[in-house]
Length: 114
Length: 114
Image (cartoon, rainbow over all chains, first blue to last red; front, side):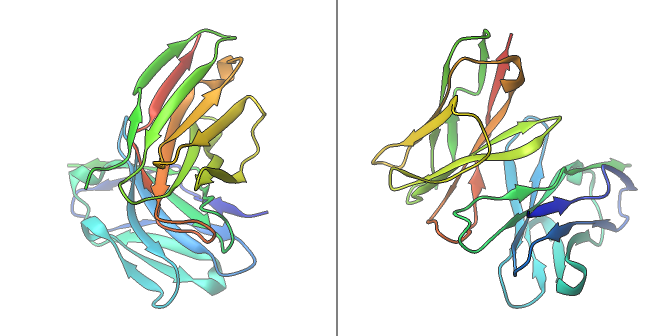
């Protein structure tokens, strides 16, 4: 069965520091990969997606992610974190023929120290 | 372009009652998916509708049902509410279905069952 693992439940970084959030998936074929962000009491906002092609994808708010097939990973990165980035981040996977069903990871809650 | 709207935003119900939640997708989007978000189970896919037909279904009991109207608006219904149904219910819209497309989420409906 398909699954998504986000190993880090909580991460704390200082403002201005770099950030990497980890995501590993389990799926036999090439997946469709997404990162979403959720602020308290809000819905999910799409940060970026990978469908095919260049394995380094750029998203909104200065985020990027790299698809590594050999490691079944899709880690999210940002070179310099801002206090407004504090939120919960979800990695999700979809599949060909999946009819828009997304499997989500458990999420990583990011705290940013001033 | 207006985003995904969900009504109501908050709801309190008693065990045994039923509830109906509404979702209006982004204009031009024809697919609506529903997700349940709880602290214990995370984000779980409920079902997806396209052209008024359910195309995919998650692993939820039959008490959870939905429908889609000709204008792509969707409703989900939960009958015989249980305490465990307390959750944030999110709907997401996308252009089409079959594969996996970008999904845009609404702010959610917070359901509390007492």
